[in-house]
Image 1 (cartoon, rainbow, N blue to C red):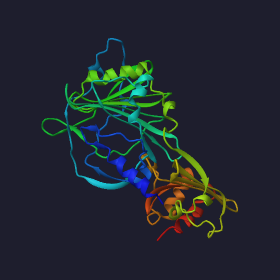
Image 2 (tube, rainbow, N blue to C red):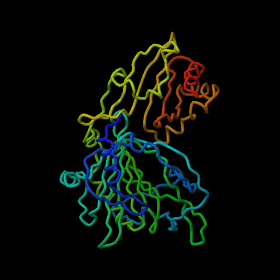
Image 3 (cartoon, helix red, strand yellow):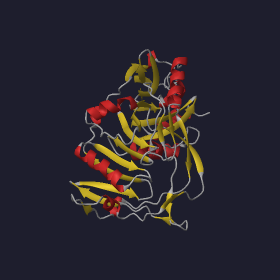
Image 4 (cartoon, rainbow, N blue to C red):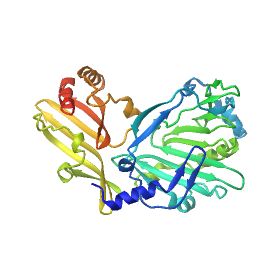
Length: 382
């Protein structure tokens, strides 16, 4: 159970920032991590349209040269206007990371180290790093903004060890002056052997995305930012690659692994009674995000055996789009046929559990059948 001190800290940090469609405003500084797993496990997702996207794989890339103009990165853009079209629906999903740590106090240090460019004309900023339940890096995000002087600006770079597959809170389509949808055509530029994918247009939000051995990167700008603004940021990071190993270790707090016997209440409702099913616990461990004298359970992993059957049961407070794609639903929604099919295809499947707090469970049948997994899932049904 979280202490009142930790709950107050969660509320303070969540109130630190205002983020809306066009603004990213830093209100005040805080050194507390955002306990995403405990404070904001559920997000209400409103889908307002289907995004029309032409696959970059079908686009013939243009070759970069030192003389290429910034607008040429976006030459396939039809420069429509942003719009929202289609009916809305809602679904509950979990955050794709377990905990988020603010880095906004590190701006001067990161600039001095050459990790980030100095951007004095964009004084507003919002920096943070997100981490998985096991403490590994999910992504880092750096936003720079301006609300006066030369006009509005929102520039950012997102970097991750691998391509992000996230569920967007709002999906929009581009429309022309008559409200007709326009395809979100992309432009691909090959630069130093790397494909840079550009989306958006002059009066729209725009992004430049690329991937190297060092990670996956995306630079973005708002409708108020010019092609020159966005490409200037690209050029800087091209010359000064953002090294993700700088952020692999959380600056505050750490993830520790303890035996389940030390945290008997962690994920109590999300772990079946394997002993009642005559399974032996080969290994049971709880992942804790720990800071000073306080900690929050963010993950669990257990291995259970019964004769030749071997089951791995993992619970996580975070889930990205890939995890949701592999999710069969809740225990009361699945069938033996669905589980057997998933096990025969890949050996594992995901379940969504919502008892006290949301949780995504990955069940892996390392040895056994779908029937073995179905027996375990049945024990969780109401």
